[in-house]
Length: 110
Length: 113
Image (cartoon, rainbow over all chains, first blue to last red; front, top):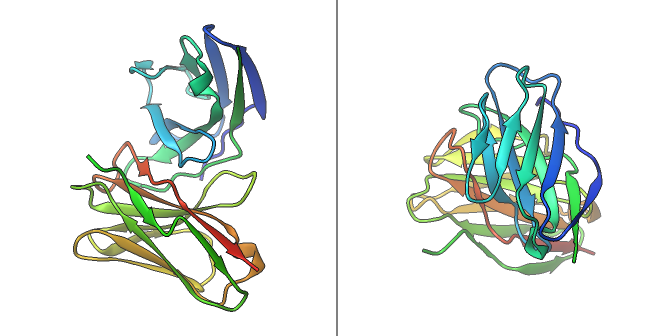
């Protein structure tokens, strides 16, 4: 499985935007970039995914570098409920296997 | 609509015993995957089943097995439990093979003593 690199942890102030970086320099042409998050005492939750173009949904935005070797998950306005471990995952189309790393622990400060 | 359900919520077993964990996917979902999450780590892929057939297997010993039933629910079985099997076991369901979104259940917390 292709690997991703994320910071171990980040802090953000409540109601401010949060930019979560992810490096994936060995990404292949068929790898989709997925983001999941895991709130305390819960199973992971799908956030967003993309292939080449930037993507937006109700939860977040995903900005993908032109060479696809990095991406950034953007939470537009952090709330206390956004405090979680965020996982950046590469997944080949047609394969349901998600290769989670250690993720990025996001702390939201009131 | 009900989400993914798993049972039991918590379980305590002794080394050498056998355990069966159960998962009911979201209605209409035909694929179920199992993950193991050890404290402080991200989930690790164990199995994926789609239409009752095994479609993927992670790097786990043969003590781990699973199956999917005609109603798409699934069981994960672990034989000859070791202390290192203590973990949160997560089930994820999705519409089909290659679906973009997977929906995770709350997990079963297994403690082996």
